[in-house]
Length: 556
Image 1: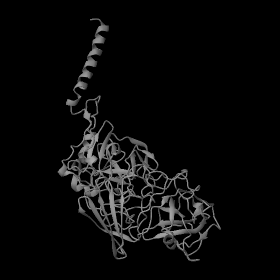
Image 2: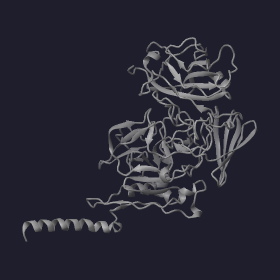
Image 3: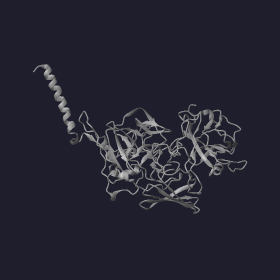
Image 4: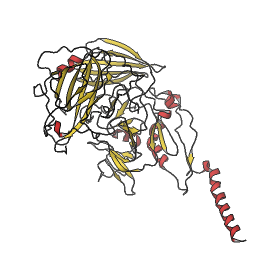
C-alpha cells in the first residue's frame, strides 16, 4: 500500500468512527438531550397554576455531541435543584443546548403577604411564565470581563430565580431602598409588584427545607447557583467577594445567602445583558388592572384561601381592618371585592388585556413598582398597556377613591448615567436646587406639584415642596425661583433644603412630579409634603419619579 492510499484510509476511518456515535446519540447518557418534567396528574395540579404550566406544549428534543465524550452535567445538576418542585407539579422544566428553562405561575406554596408594612395594594396573581415566556438560566456561565454590581443597577425585573419558580428581584427597590429594611416584604421575603406578580427580594433560605441542605436555593440569571448561609458541605462560609460569592476548592464559582445586604448575589460574576435597567431576556408579567398607590399606615395581617380559586387579604389601618377578596375565573378574569376599614364595599372584574407586560417580566408596566424612572436620556415615558391611553381608574381599597394615574417621565440634565447627584446641589457645594424637567401632562392638566424626598429607616424626609406650578411650565431651571408656590421642607422653611446626610454611605433621593386636574385645596401657608399629598389625592392625572443617589465625601 502506497503512502497516499494509507492516508486516505486513515481519514475514512476517522469519519466512520465519528459518525457512529451520532447515529446512536439517544442511547448514550453523555449526549445531553432536551428534558422536561413529566406533567402532573390532574389531582396533583396546583389550583393557582395556569393550565399551560401543567400541560406545556411539546418540545422537540435537542442535543449536542461533545467532542471529548465527557458527560455534560450542567442541565442534570440544575434539574436536580429544581426537582423537588417539578416532581409535585409546582413547576415544569426543560433544557436545550444553551439554557435551562423553568415554567411556573410565580405563586409559591408557602403563606404569603403577612407582615408587609409598606403595601402597594397589590395581591398575588398567577402569571404565565410558560413557553417562550419561561425563565431561562445559562447552562454554561461565562465569567464576565467586568462583573456588574446590582447596587443602583438592575432595579427592574429579576436578578435570580428561586428553585420553586419564583423570581427574585434586586434587594433594592426601584427607589434604591432596601426593601427588607423598610418593611415592604412578607415573612418569606416577598411581595407583589404592580402587575400583581409575586417575587422575592432576599434569598429564600426557607426553601432549604424542601431541597435539603447543600443544594442551591436559587440560580442567578448569569447561571451561577445560590446556596444558603452555609457551604454545601455544611462548613461556615468564608471569603465572599463584594457580590456575595466565591469559588470552591475545585474552582467552581457560586453565591451565598447573607443576613444583611446584598442578601444574595450583589452583582453578576457572569456575563449578562442589561437592557432598560434589567437583565435581558427574561419573562413578562401581565397585569390585569391598573396599579394603585401605596396605602399609608397599612399592615397586612392575614392572607387565606377560602376556596381553591379565591383568596382573602386582610389589612389594618389605624386599628381598623379592611379586606381585598378576589376570585379567579375560568376565562382568566379576576373579580375583586374591596372592603375599606369603614365598611364600604366596591367590586370590579378585571380581564386579561394582552399587550406588553411588566418586569418580572421584561416588558414595561403602566406604572413602575420595580422599574427605575426613565434615564435622563429617555425622551418618552413607558407605554401603558394597550397603547397610550391612561389606564382606567379603580377603587382605592382604603378610601374608595379613584386611582390609576398614568406615568410621567421626569429627568434632570444634572443627573448623569451614574445617577449620582453632583455636590453642587447639596450642602457640600452651593446648595442650589437642581434643574428638573418633565413631559407635559395628559389632557386636562391644570397645574403641577413637585416633591423632593428621601425614605429614611424611621421616617420620610422632604427637602423641596412646590405646588401651583402652571400647566404651561415643564422645566425648572437650576436654582429655580418664583415658579409656583413654595411649600415647607422638614425644617419648616419654604425653600430648597440641600441633601446633607449625617450618616455614612450612599443615600437615595427622589423627585416626584404630579400632573393635577384641578388646583389642590391648600391653606395659604404651612403646606408640607403630607398636606400636599393629601390634597392631590383624587386629582392626580399622572405622576413620575426621578431617583438618584448621593454620598457625603464622594467625588463631585
